Amino acid sequence: MLRLLLVASTAILICQAIIITVYRLFFHPLAKYPGPKWAAITNWYMAFFAWRGDFHLKTRAMHERYGDIVRSGPNTLSFNTRSALDDIYGIHANVRKADGWVAYSASRRSPNILSAIDKNVHGFKRRTLATALSDRGLKELEGRILEHVDDFTTILGTDDGSLSDPSGWKQPTPVATMCNWLAFDIMGDITYGKSFDMQQSPALRWIASVYSKMSHRGMMCIVQPKVWQYRLDRIFLAPLYREIIAAGTWVYDRAKARVALGDHGERKDIFTVMMGAKDSKRNMEYSLKDMWTESMLLLAAGTDTTSATIGALFYYLVHDPQALERLATEIRATFSTTDEIHPGTKLNSCTFLRACIDETTRLIPAVPNGSPRCILSGGMIVDGRFIPEGTVVSTSLYVLMRKNEYFHDSDEFRPGRWVADPATGVDEASVQAAREAFCPFGTGPRSCVGKRMALLELTVVLARTLFLYDMRLAPGAKCCATNTGPKKCEYPFKAWSVAFPEQEALLQFRSRQ
Image 1 (cartoon, rainbow, N blue to C red):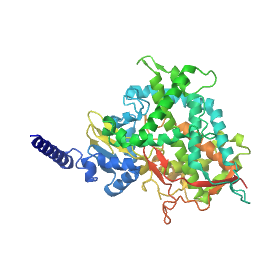
Image 2 (cartoon, helix red, strand yellow):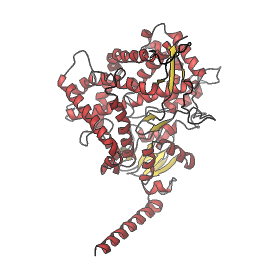
Image 3 (cartoon, one colour):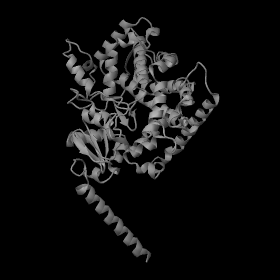
Image 4 (cartoon, rainbow, N blue to C red):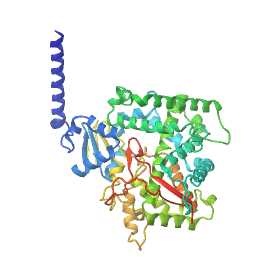
């Protein structure tokens, strides 16, 4: 009897799978859109690439093969045009965040700004963080940020005695890792009012390593929400889950201690703003758990994203001697001392500095993969096509900004494309055309709230470093993915929730000559 029941159950499951497969391939409302057949059948197909960290590469390959609209899941469409980006993420878009976003909060009952699906909850949290990270808010935090940048540049110039070089070059330095420690020190200071001191001490560096694993988990849940729904992440990430839990507990204790301190007086931080935030109309304010989940997110959003971009900046520059020389010349001609290098008119006048930053964020946007949105009742028009309600839609920033239609030689690091100059053949029209497709921080009401802070860190770190030092790729360092062709020096990275360097590039520094 048991055997018969087992056979019957198996037969039912097989029939169900066949019916679902046939429906999704031939009768589903999205069946007319091209894409891999396996993607049309199950979300697990793209979840495999999300797990590997090359979801962005698979998405690009699909668009190159199938066109600007690709069916990337049973109920999912990926678009690759600027107009689609505006349609999906614009302020009037008839969408909400897709279900998988809830996985980005440390608590299932306390969403943070990224995981909040309810627009009122998101609006309250965004207004709070926008206040903390506004121009005025950053001005209050600027001095503390610059202190940590000074620590970073001092360490770059420290000789550990392991290398005796008559030319003055110091020992090889893992810059991407150092940038990550710098970013954590800054975020610890401006979030809790106290640095993590990762640049000076290894005691808390384990926290930085755990965040890449958390990003891995988040991306899996975005692509296949069942991972979060059925807690499958505890299976996929079983060896790492103890570390993730430990990090969450550590951050909770840090948040609890910070709340107990109350207002710091003149030494403001993000907790100061959160503790004072209230929405009387909707009866919203931050509980301790809310501040915990928000600070968990802030440590990811304000560290891995910025450090990946700074690391990529250094990487591309040491592979492009002409760009490096031009940038160093601009910075050294503009400033007389490092103290002059701070946010303001003088730093803003460094057009090639900003061009290098823009080109790096074009090639390696901090959040490379699409941010899925679920279309609400009534459907909506996306890129001239009516898309029915319930469909999950997205646009990958990585794929969009590597589209040759918008950017000539889109895979090449060419910062000159952002500076109009008759000598290089770049005119204002081409710069403007590039600007129209440029969106490294996203667009619309859920674009990156920390954009100002990210640009502050990027400009100051790069400018102060190149004002003080020459730099080069360490002799014999292996970092290029291939040895020939235009992609010879492509920055190797994995794309989970954010970009992570796949291979550390060792650089050398010496006092400027």
